[in-house]
Amino acid sequence: ISKNIKKTRKNTFILAIIQRIKFLGENCYVDIAPITKLLSDKNFKPDVVYTFGANQAVHNICLAVAKYYDIRIVLHYMDNWRETMYLNNPYLSALNTKINHSAEALEARSVSSIVISEGMRKAYTEKYKHKYRAIMNCIGDQDFIEPQIPKNNHTINIVYAGGLHLSRN
Image (cartoon, rainbow, N blue to C red; front, side):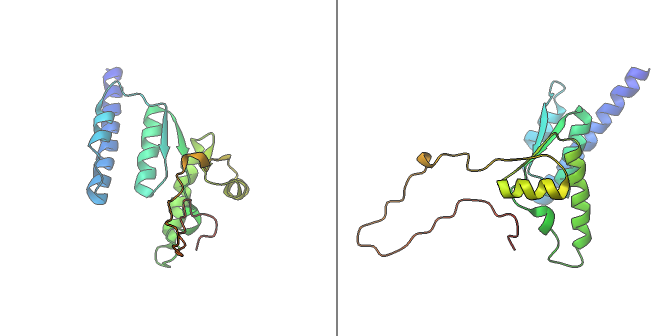
């Protein structure tokens, strides 16, 4: 009987995760069919949860999936949302505290998180007391095609390819 109870609890938990994902999909216009299909597959056994940590709903889903499968989380910071998210509105600033607490929970299930520059790695290591790895410019300069600028054209083209982080406001 206890095996059936454990199986029922696991099935109920995975259904709850799928319901959260469906809620996110319905409210953010995300195609969640591939995710729910994967989670419904009894043979699906992920090794890690990888996330940009886009919002609170994503945090909740990542934490639930990581706990369910007892796996690690890799949190990849593409900018410094921990310092800026919700702070431009005094009525929403409490949400910044909430999302920072959930980021700490994600990092508790992590060996190391990923940031987009050496400066960000140093700042985050000091501020959040977690291990971070800087990964940036993963595509070599030789892979970029130089724009063809017509001769006698005095137009200057400026192309920015990078991330916004550390005091972007």
